[in-house]
Image 1 (cartoon, rainbow, N blue to C red):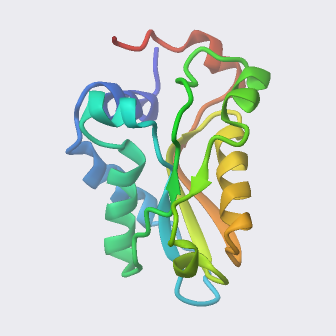
Image 2 (cartoon, rainbow, N blue to C red):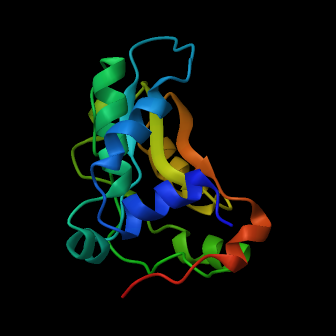
Image 3 (cartoon, rainbow, N blue to C red):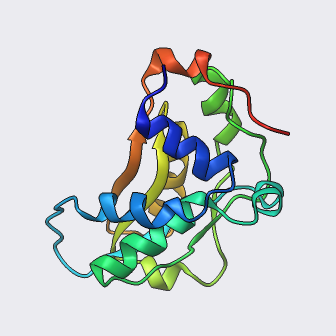
Length: 166
């Protein structure tokens, strides 16, 4: 039996239920985080192929809600020019797959330099994506980086994930 969080993430990510983002993002925004200044919300990017297939980036949908409710700017500071899906990859394969695959969008470093960054994604599985995005944000001069996700996948559950459509 799958958990409600797993079902919600799957419906947002693969089922086309973009409207779930409002409820999920609202729950994420209910977390109390003591910021030192005025942070910026940065969604974890997906590949252009995935964005075209889905019609949206699920992390961006969540980040827009969090940014609006917290009254902070949304900055799409990162891009992922290539790469393949992380579904069904082991922890080591995930790290290799995303290593160096995230970069700072040209000209946006001034929007994050010295700022607190709230990095937003739908789910944390192994941390490989988070680590790679943090490296790119750090290179761009981000002051501090906090990770906010809707769900955390348990390590043993990664092998049992349902098949991805398409």
